[in-house]
Length: 232
Image 1 (cartoon, rainbow, N blue to C red):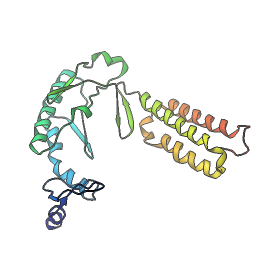
Image 2: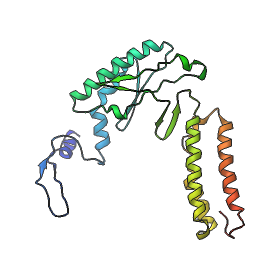
Image 3: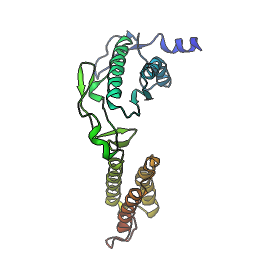
Image 4: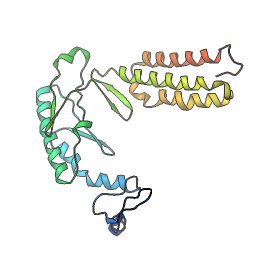
């Protein structure tokens, strides 16, 4: 197994080619080819210590590709904020030691609480390395939007806008396609958006039904349009 990985990582070169010229080839001593089959696995092995580093501070890590979330549920906000700051400092130092860079411009901090306790959460920025990151009210994780008040209203609004945009595009080409083709487009471009990660909408069925009803009414309105014989 080690020989297999070694053969994959050694003996690689790279160069830059333009329309009329080509640079000299240089040996690739670090990293793996972007988009390669083993690239993701090797990256996880490279940063495996990050998970243990975060857990040592009583926090919970969650990694997806090169994105890492750190979270914890706690009533004592001041203690949690102190742990988070110390943890981020150690993560920042650890990344430098292994030739990685923590990007503050892509770092977001979200404090979650019920609407009744929103006044109790911190409002100041969080230090990340040498910069300060402002708090946000909404974050997106794997295309699901999360609110500070855990109401999922931002996600519902985003899905509705995406569905309306897709329906508008379908409506513009409805006269040049068959009913079967249009139904396929609706399922591919609209229904999939409603179905994606719908488990996060558990407990707010009223909003989900309203979202589905709006999309359905838009589809039915287009299907009943008197300006063309083809249904949408």
